Image (cartoon, rainbow, N blue to C red; front, side, top):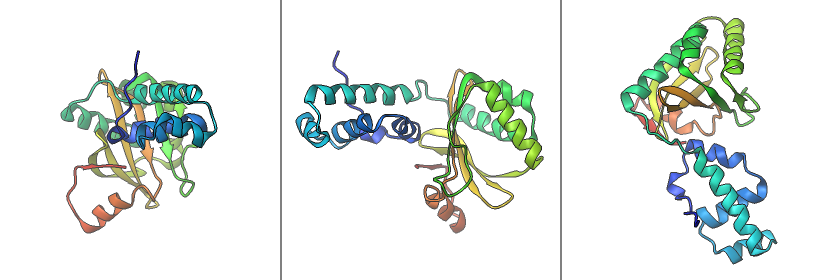
Length: 210
């Protein structure tokens, strides 16, 4: 079966996170061949590997990236509702409401860019995530985060929020069958420059790309 290359225009937030989980060689083969369009032989020379090995590297990477793409688009109304419900549940410490929103296989990704505090590794599973937010609520109390604006991020529903200390972040959600399967938190100030600028300028915006 011939696999279609991934369209570089489809490299949204969830897919970029998938790239981070590839091995260095898989990532290089995928980026050089699929994204930049270099011929396989040229990629092989660049990586100092045989062409068949590079073909396998690119194919494995492609499967990982394609599997990360949300399989079912969520309606805007449903996405906005679930995003707001997640913010309310986590900020108030309502673990029962939070659990009702999460799929069993949910995973939380957090990107602080080494500049602000963030989770170092993805957090898998509903039970661990409930314990995580329970701990945050115990440490910081109720209403420790303020909702700045609901937005869509790379085609995913989410919102912009700000902590009491002023740290800005975006949170986006992958949703399937009415449950959250992925939570993508961006706290890296370098990736939030456009959001911060739009907020500072008072400009209206309903979606952003990161």
